[in-house]
Length: 217
Image: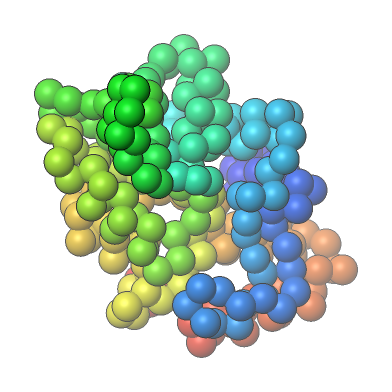
């Protein structure tokens, strides 16, 4: 595992974004770990989060210039922090996000920030993909723009089944024809946890969960 991925998992755990225990996902599945970007609460934390997304961006896309889109609400601070981190790395890219309700006064519209046009590439930055519902909602919101989504980045790939035996991330990628990248995946988390014997119970519970709900890819 690359060192930045190990540092990212350590950061998620220390910030309370990654928790272990008994949780219920939106899908109704009982899950042994939970990821919530809403637990990012300080300037330093959101700065660090953006820097890890930027590392993944540079690794996957290099210096390709795209327009970052952060779906409301959790995607908004993520898109801003990633744009800042990319700029710190020498790649200045525009960003935008949506309002939940369209504004009918002032400048109006549903979008805030740089609205892409002329066939520009959009990169969506989200927290996690569970069933792919949020990405499908974003595609519906973005469909009338003269632009195309070229990739999605999320914090963690859960490697869980979606509607089929494939993962929700793989299903979304195939449905819309773009890659979906994650900073880390659940197997990186397992590898990280296995470095300390005190995590054995959590490792066993996650492995048992994946034996039932893990994607076949």
